[in-house]
Amino acid sequence: MNSVQPKIYSFDEHQISPDKIDEHAVYVIQKLRHAGFKAYLVGGGVRDLLLKQNPKDFDISTSARPEEVRAVFRNAILIGRRFRLAHVRFGKKIIEVSTFRAGENDSTDLIVRDNIWGSEEEDVLRRDFTINGLFYDPETQEIIDYVEGYTDLEKRILRTIGNPEVRFIQDPVRMIRLIKFCARFHFEVEPSTFRALTDLKEEILKSSSARILEELLRMLESGASKPFFQLLHQYGMLHSLLPEMAHYLNMRPESPIFSLLGEIDSEIKQKIAPPFDRCLLLSALLFPLFDEFLRARAAQENKSPHLGTITTTAEHVIDCIFNPFFSLPRRTKSIVSFLMASQYRLIPLDGKPPRRNRPPNDPFFPMALHLLKFRSIIDTSLLPHYTLWTEASFNAHAKVAAGEEEPSARPRRRRRR
Ligand code: ATP
Ligand code: MG
Image (cartoon, rainbow, N blue to C red):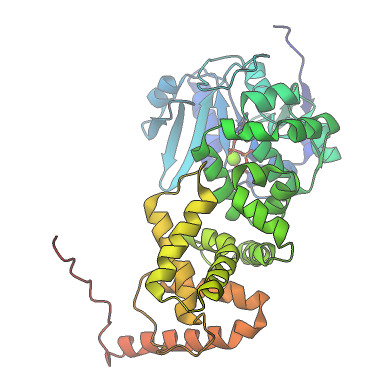
């Protein structure tokens, strides 16, 4: 393979302040170098530093093999089969250290294993987008660029490293990642990369559903979920992944789904709350579709279902949306259906006031109330209900704290079968 001379950008050009870089990541790099290996900061961390954003994580790429990394750090464990790497732990923080890998060349086979070691240049060439292919050397404070990623970042362009068609066929999850970066940074997609995305979108079904589900859930947590799901729908990929949802959005362009996601994004960006539980995020994504289904069915049968039936219907709707491609963990499915069904406990389907407004002492009730909060922000007619329930919940807590009332949630005994 012909070796390319990388472009080097010094501190004077990139202006990345060293105090923005995680001290543990710098320590890991130094220690690997003292042990005789090459090591750099790489990927999303470098990209985010150049965009003046706070990186979510600092990944390191090294010439040391996973076992060699483990030998250097007592606090390292090795993980992954498809993609073997080391996690170096510092309390709750994890620094991910991966070994330089060679790419897939031009083969259009789906990649199932990715553990062929390579040079630092090869390691960049197997990465997805040019903006994710930059190395940073904390000792010299230089950016090392083999793929013109630095200028693409300046021009705000998303471009695959190598032929986009080949790269998307090799790993279709890259298409989801492309949409994720579009949503997050509002960059332009380079024309041939965009053409490949349009032509190959159905390839996405060939990749692992667990990996895609993880990317979708990460996007719900990202603060850019609204533009992400809008683009996913606009580029026709939602149709492949969640056909029922795409169909619903085509029928109901005015659906509150995107407004709900927008509210979640703005709470996440303002960091009002601790990170949201994924079940709450999923329930916000699914609720509008479920609500419409439930109301249509109630109208058809001319009666309001009781809560038990509503919960089973919620499970059925979740199955219809996620099947056949995805399978949600059972526990997630049951919490999400609880959260959606609880909305009708808070505001009954028939519009009558609830029979009791004593908050159930269920550990998931606060999440159900939070879902109602999101709904009331976009539909202010629900606001009085939300206020009433929030007060009732506050009073119930105050009574328990004052010892006036026993918490009603004594753990229920399970009946033996
Ligand atoms: P985020 O900010 O969401 O973490 P990221 O780009 O850092 O974005 P990671 O999943 O943390 O995403 O991946 C780290 C790096 O690994 C990427 O920047 C990219 O260089 C490389 N990478 C990740 N996924 C792929 C893939 N499917 N194909 C090729 N390279 C990838
Ligand atoms: Mg990352």
